[in-house]
Length: 369
Ligand SMILES: [Fe+2]
Image 1 (tube, rainbow, N blue to C red):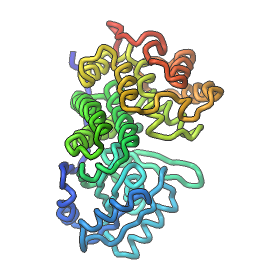
Image 2 (image 1 turned 60 degrees about the vertical axis):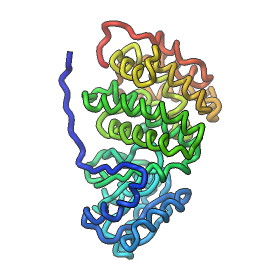
Image 3 (image 1 turned 90 degrees about the vertical axis):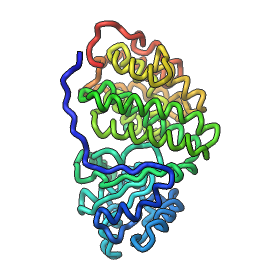
Image 4 (image 1 turned 180 degrees about the horizontal axis):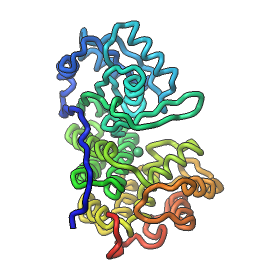
């Protein structure tokens, strides 16, 4: 039966393809912008300068100071520099840090943003913003932060290191997974999620074999776009709650943590999410158990598969369980202390994810897909 749903499309433009960077000046001009400040992280300064060169006289300058979690001082500095240089907009080049900085400036000062993503994080497709002030991170959703235009050029991603490509790609697949069983899932978003997971799962092994394979890079970025759109349209559940707790309280690395936890969070939810299991099974090549297939994929790609190898101490598990259970949120399968504890212990050791929280087989007759 087709369930009822709501779906709001976000007002933005996407330009995709190898060589798309050449069209950036026209994109900027179409938005009525004449001088833009290029934002990037120090690690991505080279590609930031490449983008500024493509912009020619429309580039007002480059600020290579974007950092994780968007410190408010950096956002203020970028705003002041934009004012000093007479910039009327920003072009954010890179991953979550640079695009997050562009969004913070859009939120606080109304400067329009064009995004040029070079990782698979997907932030450019969402209205989610974050700002960190005196160690405290505020986040929210606001349409004002949405990039006006997003330019995906796979040629800019060929230098993304293989290991980072893999964990960033699996982090993107996590958005597809949780979007498929989200409380606000809808048919078009589920199509994007299935296709996004399929494209990334197919592209990542080819990228590990040859990081300069442009066709594989294009396929991965196409998947990342779709998974980002899913993130922008749905509410995330257990997997994200666990990863944010692990990142926030233990400072575990973002994409690696998502990579390790995903098979276990999915194994926990699979019995209560038959439609998500069916979609992911198709996406991953008609596999019987998507959670297991993702765990095997991570192994083949040489990605980390245990929280232990990310430096987590086994004694921290019970604290993470308590925080993850402290505030209620939507999840297809009810959360039990015992189940989450078992999930985290399996993820800490890096066991095959099959038996977490009971069975990972699809139980007939359960609701919430
Ligand atoms: Fe995420």
